[in-house]
Length: 104
Length: 174
Image (cartoon, rainbow over all chains, first blue to last red; front, side, top):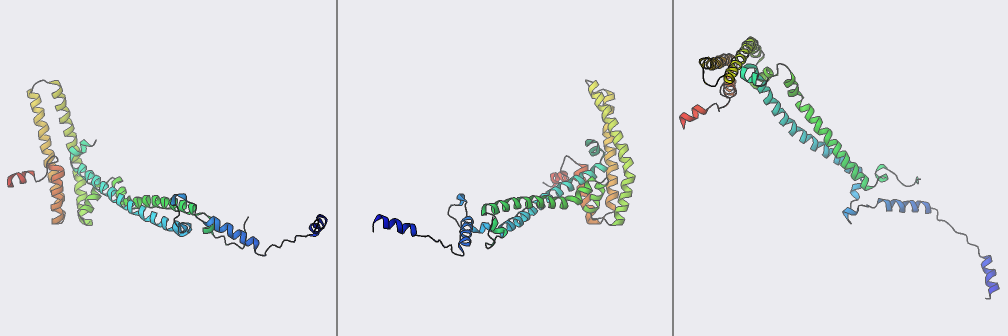
């Protein structure tokens, strides 16, 4: 085949690309898979896909609430104890003139 | 831009880092709200009691399990004792002021200073007697076990504030 024949052949060559019907869908799926991979270098190669779930946030909120309630009850118990002592002192002041004058 | 054929639920729209952040912030906010909420509601009763003008008497009612009738009698006793207590306060103040002035003015124990010391002591004794009489009257309104507890507490708080109430007892038994 000489050059002229080759040029003629190339000129007559027609490219008809055919895009597969689910091409776009596959592209989006690949993007979604790539985005779903964890990107927390701090955790190295650990599987932390469970961090993705909203259940984690729900559990954390519930645990935070329980912990807060626990600390709140402990603190309130101490505050109640202090208030009880101050009420006792208030009663003593109401009957003891010296104690009454001491607090003026 | 999104493809409708791709499921885009809320869990998939966020990255894991975001969920972790939401979880931490949510836990912190829930914890703080729960802490202050519990603290507020669990201390409300006593805070209101402490702020009330008759909080001391209310404390007495709860601490010594007083019935309605017992509380009314003790309230009446307290009302009758209040002017006595105020008068004692006035006498203590007068006696102490006089003693303070004489101690500052003198450089030795003059007869006038000695009299002021005696007077301050007398006022203190009388004050203790009045107080003790009131304490006995109040304890007489209580149930026997509560009356014992009340007397023990008052002994330690009022009669011997600087000493343990069983100091003398311990000294004789040791």
